[in-house]
Length: 139
Image (cartoon, rainbow, N blue to C red; front, side):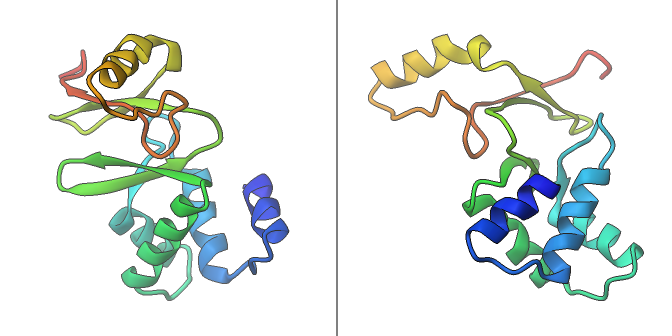
């Protein structure tokens, strides 16, 4: 979190209570569920004592995603957010909504196939990278 706040300061952005609270909640997210929806972040920010509305939390999440500090992964009908500290691709369970990281090299063939079909794919995994939907082995 300190690195993200430092990069924001370098860009001339203030360390607002909302930004700090959102980043704190994402840092504290459990390692087996590091991606949270705006509603989940909002609930945890309020539980931590900051009175902020859901619109503000959503705005902070979108802004941090646009700045490259977070990435967004669509899960069911919601967008979830996690730190974009390194290139990431994801597998999402359509039953329990668990999200796992997939190594960039593991999706290289799919990225190359998308390129051959005329798509400008993102092999580095910025934003949400490649997202694979299915059922996890627990479900």
